[in-house]
Image (cartoon, rainbow, N blue to C red; front, side, top):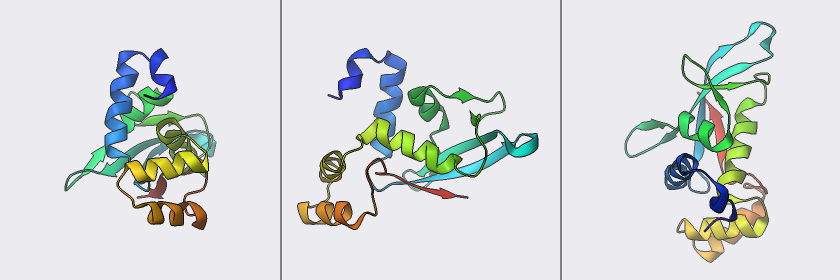
Length: 139
């Protein structure tokens, strides 16, 4: 059990469980820009993963787990500019789900079914740096 789970409300535990199922290490999180404020000081994005044969929106669960604001029009509202929002959200989600040290990444990869050699190769290559067990792409 994750050390944070003892203090999490049931709603957050449900969101975390769903996200752990969908966002295994090395998963790509697809980001869709839904809106930008004047001056590009804030953005509204939706996050998706490829579920079974179709994209699946994970925005609500991510917002619940990370305690982020959801726009009334849908999507996660960030009080940050557009430039780094995909990377920042993915990094925060990665840390919340898989931890951030090399050993956490290695363990998460093995738990996702990677062989010991493949898990070591991913960690050594730097492709999944600490805090980056997930990848992000803009759509």
